[in-house]
Structures are given as C-alpha cells and as structure tokens.
Image 1 (cartoon, rainbow, N blue to C red):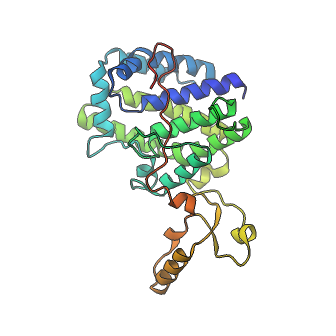
Image 2 (tube, helix red, strand yellow):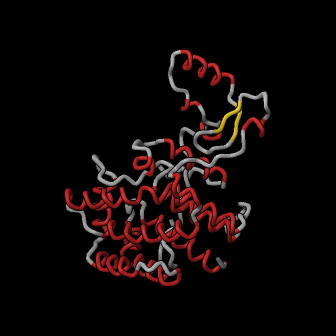
Image 3 (cartoon, rainbow, N blue to C red):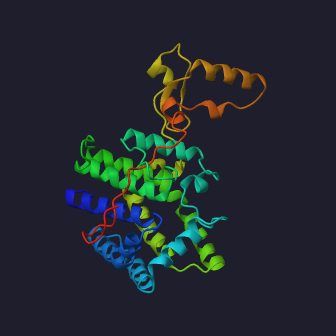
Length: 299
C-alpha cells in the first residue's frame, strides 16, 4: 500500500470516527450535512470500496436534514434508554457493557500510545474510538503522529486487519439490526442506517484484505509463547485472558485463586495481566480530527 493510499485510508477512518460522535455542536452538524457525502464519495472512488449506492443514498438523506435532526436521530438510536443500537462494541461482543473485549482493546490502545482524552466521556470500545484508532495506526505507518514512533507499514496493516476482524466486524450486523429497530419504533430517519451501510462495506473489504486467520476465532486473544518458557519454569506464570501475553501472578491473586479453587469456584477471571487489569477507568482515544475538508472546523 503506497503512502497516498495510507493517507486516504487514514482520512476515511478519521472522518467516519467523527461522524459517529454525538453531533451536538452546530458546527459539527453543518459539517456533516454539507460535506460528509462529498468526502465519502471522493475517498470511496479513490480507494475502490464500491460503496457508490450508499454514498448516493447518504447524499439524498442529508439533503432533507436540518442540523437538529441529526442530534435527535443520534440520541434516539444510540443514547436514549432503552438503547436500540449501542455504539459500544462490548455490548454486542460480550453482551455486557465494559465486557472483556473492552479491556482487550485498551491493551491494544496502550501498546500504540493512545491515551485518554479528558473531554471524552464514553468507553474505549465506542465505535468512534475504534475507527480513530485505525486512523491512528495508519498515521503511524505514515510517520505523521508527532513524536510517536512510526510503525512499519506492513506491521500497521497487519494490526489493523487483526483489530477489525476481532473487534469491529463481528458486531456490525447487530448494529445494523438495532438501527433498523430504532427506525421502526422511534421514527428515526435513514441517515445513520445508510452511514453504517457504508461503514460495513469498508470494514468488510479491509478485514478481508488485511485480516489474518483470526477470522474464525472471533475475539479470542493471540496466544504467545509458553509463559513458563518466557518468564521461568519456577514462576507462577499464566497467559492473560485478554491480551494473551505471559505474566506472573502476584501473591494476592495466587492466594485468591487457591481460596476459590478450594470452594470449587472458577478462577479464569483472575487470569489478567497487570497492564489489562490496571486500567479500570479506561484508556480512550485522543480527540479525533474533524471532517476532512479545510472548510470544516477542527474538533
């Protein structure tokens, strides 16, 4: 993949990330209505996703939108309980908010230098965070992330494919169904349904092109080498159930595991490395950029 294509893909994922944030500000609403379809049309053509129908449908839907309409639709679909279509991946992957996949994703983010944005109040598995993380990896491959060390393009693309296959593609079907339900039950317009249709085509294409054999393994973390071989044969070593890396169980966890074993209770939930365990408050993305064209305000 050449630098121009990497840059275009980074732009596309950043734009989609911005599009799935709450359209609260009037400036963001205007940017979505006035320029989102143009941006997606241009990048779809340049990158060859074949999502022409979705772009045309989105343009038609946005033609009839006023700024507040977007916020009403977004709130009805993604924020107002009972939420028809959650934008948090773990709700779909784990059937629980802040499920195991959330902590696994946070391990990925930390590994690539992604930190909490103080003004971002949602969890690290929010769709906007996931998409911005992919854009971040693409910018790392381009060496455009400031002081952050560049990631070799082949490594970045492999990471992106793995991430999409594990944590994004598996829940897109549930998101589409939830949006359809919200449209019927709450009279929501088609804009976000069409936007998700476009996203699904992008994710499917990139996961198929870049993803590895983890496709059949769902969100099962990678298995690293035998932890006793890595850490030492005498260590109380295990694999982290979230990121898959070997680590040494600390004394308190060993004691707790023995007590649970004695009572015939499971201990799998204790098999979590310090990196994945310590971030209970969440590691989220940096604030993603606004939409692409210069006429759009920066987020």
